[in-house]
Image (cartoon, rainbow, N blue to C red; front, side):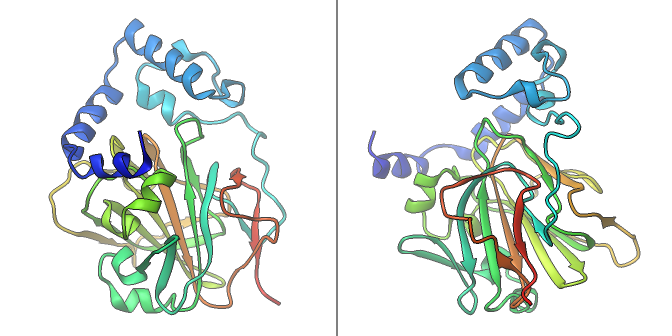
Length: 282
């Protein structure tokens, strides 16, 4: 099937219904059936269960438990860098935000304000800053960690579409990451603000954070916001901050003159949580 046809079909699919159905199945405790599905998934995608804290697929009561499995201690050491990669995955794109425009793929850009749920004041803090878009494939570890230490100030659930977020769709759907459902997490750090955006996708049953739990469902169809001015949610570099219940994409935003990316990074390259992502400019 051609890439263009694959993308076109996504406009026709009942993506919300498929996602609800997938979420219910992923949470189902189906005994031998669940174990058989997990075994097939491991074989199909080449999941490295040797890295899991519990490598026995029969030990996972639901697909969600398997998908959000923790890793063994020590398999993702933190680099001695100012900023570390927050996930296992692949670099979709990264670089400089051109005024307020983020590069998605050849011929496609989108505005920071659109990504952040229409908050122009928040978006302006990242004008001419830095961004990184990291794609998590089905085989990857699906917990999300902090690229640097930070204090949570806001969380925004932005309703939206549920297109796939694979590379082909990123090339074919304009403004993909600002169209899909997403959870925007705003932090303050010693270097200023930064944002981690968890982007939903087709059959991504839900997204969760360590301070809130499952954010979606529910999906009320309107923007929801939580402020943490009084609650002290402080997370260290490398600490877990959230997880995908089925995989997706993380977009990060940093202010101007905050982050100089690792010179070895390149679009399409595989990355692992804890590897050096960059340093503070000198």
